Length: 233
Image 1 (cartoon, rainbow, N blue to C red):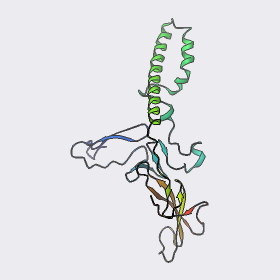
Image 2: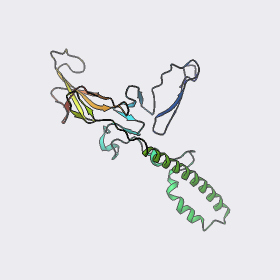
Image 3: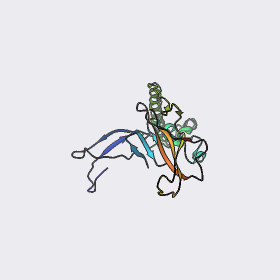
Image 4: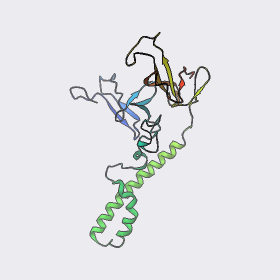
């Protein structure tokens, strides 16, 4: 990030899932605040999550914490962020993804024309690409195995002060009765505040309600919604 004069005031390095690996502040810019992460994501220091307009993204797991608001139109996995960081690897930016499945067949075909100069050059290029691909895939598998061996500590379920267990993603509501409340934008009369239950990643594990919208009292709260209570944890 640069200032208005083009001088560097912040530099950061991210992993494939958008998590900030490290950051550096040049001299005299130690107080610079840079909350932006992946495209359209804003780092929420309180929760450790990335705010992405309609829902939160968890960079440690590479997925959203709540379902896609457009449902199955975005794909079968309602929590998916992006699949290519898991199944396509291109460390040097030189390998065409479509080439990987075809490598065995290409090599088999080149066996018949291996004595041709053009064939040798093509084969050498493909072998180099295949070697880079295999190295990258091996590295990714190793990282995946190391991740699977991590301490599988999990947060306890969210619980309200009355003892009710509230799963993450639960929709809650609070009635704002007018009067005694004063009319205010965008509703002149009584209305509902709609919330969604969230929980910070381990080890914070803080449960909180995130307001998503307000609706007129005549519409009624969403089906399955529960009255909002304070969380005990």
